[in-house]
Length: 542
Image (tube, rainbow, N blue to C red):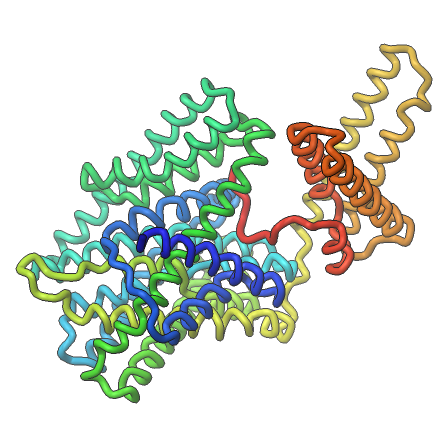
């Protein structure tokens, strides 16, 4: 019964928080962290027992895998140096700085446990940041660096996290041994992920059924994680490697029908997993705070503020030097790649919001040591982690758009121009193919006039980016939405009158949904009146 209650609470909370995020137009992680905080304040909520180790296994693989699928390998490789400096160097420095700060503020915390907190809050989550940046037309390289950083730093942070937890459990730690083991488990995890990716690519080519394909794809992240962990390699790096490799080959092996289906499945799964973790932390927060009675509230607040400030300040202190140091060392001769300007570096520094990975890692902390003693200061680590997440997500996330406008960053149209260039090339080929078929069939050219006009309208709509439509295009757009709305209403009328069966209704409704999904969006009121689809919660994955 408790499991069903938790599932019901999960679904109801996900619906409410998803609606709030859409209604107030901010990234859904902010709504989730606010919802989790609200649950923590609610009295008499039930407590659900769960195995902490299952959190990492159940939640992180699909989230990391989807992020890897959506990462452009070309852009990732082109920006590998800044991504590596942020995702590995900054994570290590943040782990040390946060751990030392906690040890300074609470001397009774063991060094290993202090570094556990440092590893937990070291990797920022780019979901909220990129959701905002994508709407504000930021330079493409900035978004690429942040997405690449978020992908790799989750892996590096979790590897450091496992080493720190192991040091707490065993009471022993050797820097040289840990460094060698870090390299081994990292390379081994990447190797396992690449191998499994090619195995699944071969299997995928033999399937041929969209439903089976989607179900098969859902097993990839869990298989990669468990396979790597079973041979004592990095499961998270195996998942990331598998996602990057398969994402590279996905356009060639994935059917259109499977892509459409998989997008909805992945978006729903990842959103529900995010919701689950924030709900669990909310349900536990009252007992966590209750177990911290030995700390005065002022001290808890000071610890939370200090750790958050250190995490934010270290990012600023790291970003600016590493952006300029390589060119200084090379005398600007060997480093021809353009670097972000100062205002863009401020934006990168401010995009340090912590999120789902940090929260899942905190919840996954063991309850006890091998001897049966409680894990040292587990409740304090969970409390501080949640405080850092809510402060950075809400504080930095909500102020990021204003900061971008204040710094006047966001005028690079390279991605838009590239899209126009590709659309023009595709349309030219399409028009040539139409002419070729018309000539071969020896039919009047005017028969294809409407199709050519539709292609021309597509080019015009892409050129306007859907933001500044001409009066004619606005009218055509409204007419298309109105036509689909009328078709949908008539389809429902015929179905309710029992003039058509359910199967025909569902098939035609799906066709209308796809047609509407490909139309430029109208204003909010118009979109609502035409039965717009669910909010876009996260990136799409094939």
